[in-house]
Each structure stands twice: as C-alpha cells, then as structure tokens.
Image (cartoon, rainbow, N blue to C red; front, side):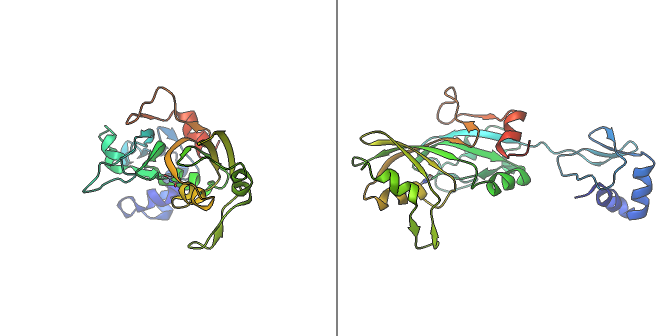
Length: 234
Ligand code: URA
C-alpha cells in the first residue's frame, strides 16, 4: 500500500488531508520523516502521524529450518507434527512455508510471515537452484545424467521439466540441482529412469545452504543479508 492511502484511511481523514499532513512533515515511517506519499509501506512499517501511532510495526520473520524426515511441511496438522511445531517463537502462528518438502524428505525449509518476500522467492524460482542429495535403491545409470539434462514430460501437468544437473557421486548417490519445484519432482524423475529414491535431502535453495551446525529439527533466523540475497532483491 502507498503511504498516502494508509494515512487517508486513518479516521477517514481523506486523500487531500493526508497529502497535506505528509507535505507538512507530520508523518514518519520507522521514525523517519517522509514527504513522498507514494512511498510503499507494509504491515512491517511503523507509521506515525505527529505522535500518534497510525500503524504499529509487525515483526517480520524469516527463518531457516532443518526439516527431519517424518515432519510435515505444513503449518497445522491433526495427525503429524509439522515444521511449525518445531519452532519456538511467539509469532510462529503467522508463518507460512516458502517451498515444501515431502514428509519423507529432510533438509532446508524456509519459513516467513512476509508474503511479498516469499512471492519474490517463488517468482524467481526458475532461477533459484535447489540442490538435493539423493540416495537410490538401484545403481544410477550413467545415461541418467543426459536424461535429467534433457527433461521429462509430465503428463499430469502437461510440462517438460527444465534442464536439471545430475552429478553421480557413487553407485547409489547423486547430487541433483533443479530450477523449479514440481510435486514429488525428484522422485518422479528417478522413477522415469527406472529407479527409486530411498533418501532425499535438500541442501540448499539459491544462496542459502543448510549450515553444518544446524542439526535436524533445529532452526534459526536468517541474517538480514540472507533475507536480501534469497529473494534476489538486493
Ligand atoms: N522432490 C521430491 O520428490 N520430494 C521433495 O520433497 C522435494 C523434491
């Protein structure tokens, strides 16, 4: 929302009075006087008119979590523990997940209450590489590398998967980089080369890698630099 609209809606002040108040330097955003009514504000900004608080600032949360196997990528569930159940924060009920993992998959999950941030992250999805460590039931055939790079047609969605980089680490382990996130994508891709994923772990999303000192079940806040880097909005 633009600042002038927020001020105008305060006690039905109206657009004109709002513009006058802004021009008269009566309005502050996060403590800084603002004279441009077009300045975008969201619910994370503190907005004041003279000394009155028009809008208190909500806390923006940006978290990374090491999802263990068996935990649901959901905010609430009656049967299974969810990633949000693992988080100890008074505002955790405001969180949503930016990029889910299957219950049987472990690794990096990002959570936030900033819808604009997660939307930017998802919009940039085709550019944001997601790296997975894969263990398979059967040996990985060397020609799988070319098949993953070429892409697979998924009938259900009527799409062909974007070129993916498969690096075979040993007979039954590989590192796979995807530039999109389709439903059960990794498992479906391996199924197409007549194999089965038995362990799947997400190591990174774009510039954010799961740190070695964040054990399964643990989480931490992203640093301000990580928040900016992840959504490509430097
Ligand atoms: N692909 C899958 O099959 N599962 C996941 O959890 C993530 C990617």
